Amino acid sequence: MTTMPRTRCLDRLMVKHDGRVFFVKVSDVDWFEASGNYVRVHVGKVSHLIRETMHHIEGQLDPSLFVRIHRAVIVNIDRIKELQPWFAGDYVVILRDGRQLKLSRTYREHLQSRMHGFS
Image (cartoon, rainbow, N blue to C red; front, side, top):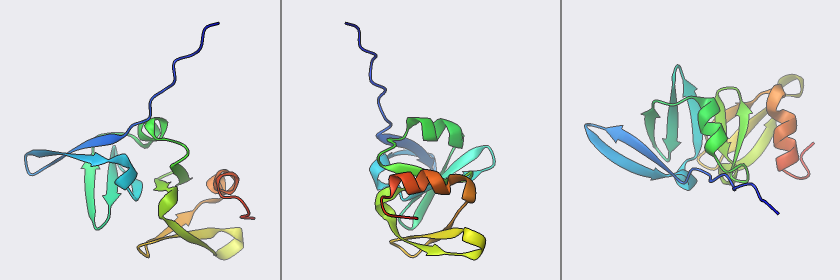
């Protein structure tokens, strides 16, 4: 019996800042944001810009830890504090630090399947 090799999820990101290279644990990331041909990585009050696409980052993240809530936003599920209803059935995702991120209708069902009891 042959088993498929398990795809390994990304556990660290390498970021450059002021000519230095830093390593950021992916589990420390609050959320990822598309920024042109780059991705802005938000960790606490600090953010880093990496030369990567959202699609590529999303494919490397552990789906049990991160969920896409908008075409331009991937959020760490552990950082979600609450969901607030917005206009016309939309929602706003409130993170533990108070940051508000829009949950687009396109990704609402995906988030619902990950967050039991949300309807």
